[in-house]
Image 1 (cartoon, rainbow, N blue to C red):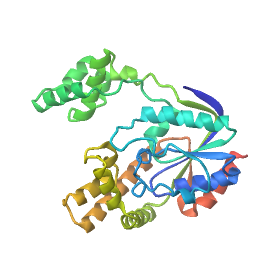
Image 2: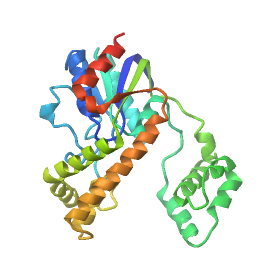
Image 3: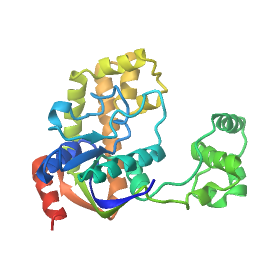
Image 4: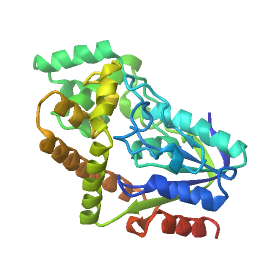
Length: 311
């Protein structure tokens, strides 16, 4: 349901830049728990039982500020951008209705765009159709040519070797009779704030790499292995969506004996740095983002944001 109301302040950017703590400080500057609430925008933090590896701010450090969109999904289920946009929009609407200011905090760009810009109205995946298409691809079928025949626009954007996305496009066409490219033209924002403010936190590459290394050490020492073992014991498998998150899939490999402790930490560091690079590229392409130096610290950046949104 579309929500139209007041302002929405967003704190976005690459991992390890202090987005959550900046949001907490900003909420306090706005007047505290009675004046603001935070909506997480993180594709890993939606899962229950994933606290250490995702860097969720401990309850004691939230300073009584209410958070939404944390712990809303089971680690064994797939959580989509479409579901996020609907549920986050409802949370933002509730915050507006309570007279508070919503602060969106997180780095999952797809979730943000689904919420603020809309997402294609394509149907959910069909496992049976997908299995059939993948089996045909493995048998040598030229799925890219088949896609070109029914959706040349989508096919023109994909390399012939990009089997995953080709299968998805064919799957949509087979399910609806409408090309995926046409579905992608049907987009509506889930929320329409009166004023949208988007602030990005970032820092120099080497400084961020150091933060990432420190974070890896911290989450390993805080019990990442135990957290992943608990998820596995609860029924999550190595292929569960939640365990594909960075830090988690590497820990599954470590638990399974695929590599030792030093390689485990090295892989988390490497993959987190690569992830941060992709996030930076995504967010830098959004002209709405006003960039701030994350090394200034959450409190200082919260003050800068407050001064900007109250001008």
